[in-house]
Structures are given as C-alpha cells and as structure tokens.
Length: 164
Image (cartoon, rainbow, N blue to C red; front, side, top):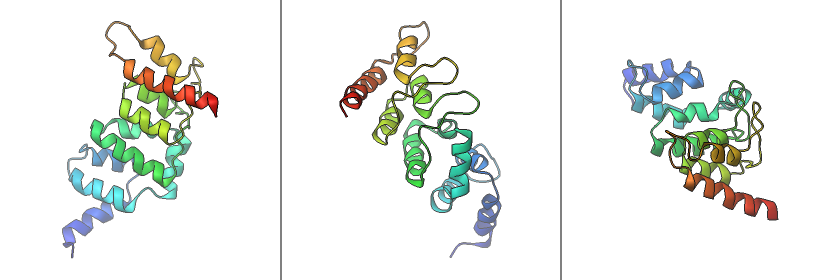
C-alpha cells in the first residue's frame, strides 16, 4: 500500500500537462522525484489527450530529446505504442521526428522510427529536405558529428522503401 505522501504526489502529477510530466521525468522539477514522475508517466499516462496534444504540436522529438539516450528509445516506444503520429511535422520547426533524430545524430532513434513506419521521404516545411538530404547537407561540416551511420541507415531504408 502506498503512503499518503506518495498518493499526494500522484494526485499533483495527475493534473500536469504531458510536457510538464516529461520535464519532471527528466528531473527538471525539484520538488517531485523524477523516478516517481517516470513511474506515473509509464503507468498512468499516454492518454488519448496526451497523444492528441503531441500529435497536434508535432513535438514528439522535443519531448524525448531531454532524456538520456538510453531512455529516449524507451519513451519513444511507449508513445508509439500509445498511437503517437511519427510523421507529424513540428508546428514550430517544420520538421518530423525523423529529421530531428538526424539532427541529433541519434542512430537508435532513427532506426526505431523507421522500424515503426516513419516516412523517410517526408520533407520539412522550411527547406523541403528529406531526412537523408538533411544528413548529407550536414555531413562534413565543421563542428558536426560524423553522421555516416545515420546516413547508411536512411539509405538502406530507402532502398527497401523503393522496392515495396
């Protein structure tokens, strides 16, 4: 049986917006332990309203980006399982989660998105670049990380994508 204090935390978290809850899950809210926020997130959230809000904003990658790399794939899998749209364009940046994964040079998230049906041909709103176009444009630029693995992953996916 949970103590009254723990239940009080759950009740206070319940009224938080999904973005506030994920910030709490990253440890950005000092009054509530991040482990409690994560437990609450994974067991009681991912509601239709949460997913609708994420889809409306197209902010899936923004939500997961604050987490450690190993936690990003867990949270992304959670939201995908709940029905979040992985091809939604972010209303602020005009990019898809796949574009954002390329910008972050995050191979694991790129692979997970592609495995779950992210469209490798989706173009961003501002420059009409596909995720591969973006990766190739950033490749070799001063101060940029080596994106070879992400580029190869996208190219493999596009080869299979074209044949189906």
